[in-house]
Length: 234
Image (cartoon, rainbow, N blue to C red; front, top):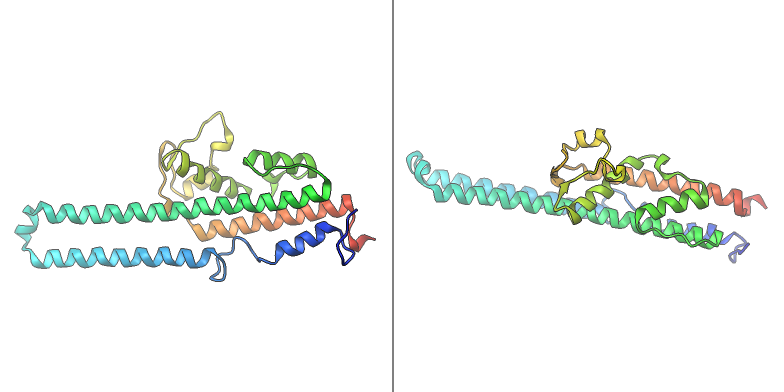
């Protein structure tokens, strides 16, 4: 078994390096996610204030009779609200897409550690290959890892935005395209309809992703200790 300069199995050293970046899906301001979420939220507040100010000015400058018959002002206001809603939805969807890309990167790194330790050739893409690798090579059923149903939902939300024009299009014959019913209710998502990405609890999804990754890492470490040995067992 290959060891590092400290006498540890190389996979233990790999996990030390892996941990240096901290929690990959933290909602904190020190993470990559926190500041971007704050930017989006601040932009939404500023845009809503701008629309409110424009509406107040419009109502102040025109009498009720003029407002009733001035279609142009009403159309402008409607357009402003629509555009603000569309941009907000796209920004939140972009976070979901980035979140899933981050999860794919995480799985790829973890599978890389396992490949080096076990001399395997696992792949992280597509997601079903990652699931098959952990089950076949490490006896880990990741569908049983905490918060997996959230991870599956993020995966589907990502695919819905990129491939289905932001619509939730589940296939009843393909379970991997279906979001857990408890989440569709919570997120107010209905089949064959557009998804309101701006209504998704992004910080909660980050927390769940973090829990999933941490538990998966512990399961991987446990398997490698039991099957390749570790410095603490020699």
